[in-house]
Length: 195
Image (cartoon, rainbow, N blue to C red):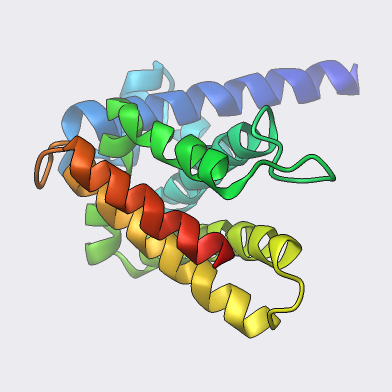
C-alpha cells in the first residue's frame, strides 16, 4: 500500500509541475501565482501547497526537474559520464540542442524574470546553475585531470554563461540564429571544455 501511495504522490507532484511549467510558458511570470497553477492543474490551492508550500518551492522543483531532464540527456546517449563519455563537440551539440525547444527556452526566460524580483526564487536559480556548473566541471576535470579543480570550475562557469546567454539569441528572443555564429559558439564552447 505504501508503494502505491508513493507512486500516486509522485504522479500528482509531476502533474503539478507540468501545470506550473504550462502557466509559466503560456502566461508568463506575472501570472505564475500558486492560484494560477492550482487552477491549471484542476486542484485546490491547499492541495498544491501540500506539495509546494511557496511559489519559490514550486519554481525550485520546476528547475530541479528541468536540470534532471537535461542531465539525463547529457548522460544518456551522449555518454558524458563513465568510460565512454562523449567528445566535447558532441557534448556541446547536446547542450545546444536543448535550445531548439521553444517551450524550455521560454520556461527559463520566465524563471529568470521571477528571480529578478524574488530572492527565494533567485536562490533556487543560483542553486540550479551551481549544480549545472558542477557537472560541467566534473566533465572538464575528467578530460583534463592535470588542471586544478579551481581552473575546471572557472571554465565550467564560463561555459554555462556562454551557452545560457546564447539561448537568448539562438531562440530569437534577443536576436537571430546564424550558422556562422553557431559555428563560432560551438568552437568557443569546445575550447572551454578541453583546450
